[in-house]
Image (cartoon, rainbow, N blue to C red; front, side, top):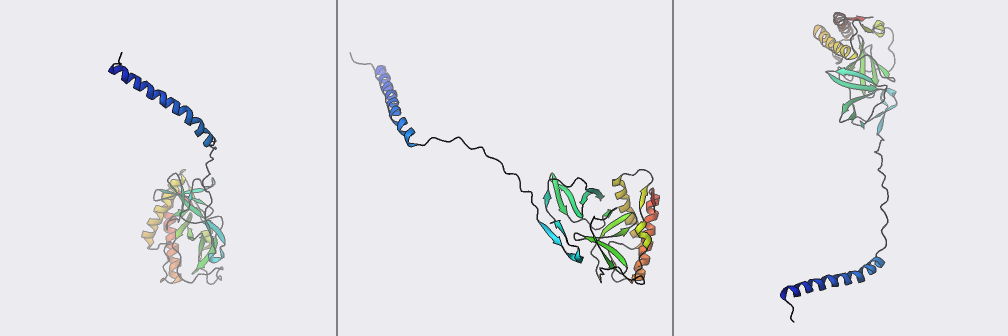
Length: 245
């Protein structure tokens, strides 16, 4: 009895499956012998990020200290840093290095001219120009102002690295002992803002800016302008609730 069309189709499918099974049974053992056994993947260890930072040796004025390059990025900064507010921006200082917060970390920056600080770096070098002391560290210059110090432009002119003779020095030694004390419990951020705003007011009143040394002005006139500026600063700070001593 001849097979029907459906029966022939079913038989052809069954034969195809049977042939595939036979071929697999023959080839798989040979492939297993040819290929070496696979090893389990090794445990990969993630390398820690590189924490080294390039530094440079500051040898100007025989300062001879190493500092990180500006633009260097740190995830963390030393815990004993100081915070200073300038134009409502925060700057972080530690051992003569200035940082700003950026992208979840801190970038080494140059402090802006005019930034008022109540302290100097732990290590600094004193230089003199026309009897006025400037304090240098990490390519940054500071000079005294009532209640602290201010970042200034690099002084232009003849610079001395030794204390000038008494007859050549017009510096008022009382500047060394001038500090300000908040009478109303002002926060450090408020003190920073008040110092800077008083600085701006004193510059307008006296037409003398200690951050920009007037090279063309005679030394005697510079010292008189400096004294006027100091008095204006003290007056402004007193009106804002600070005692200057």
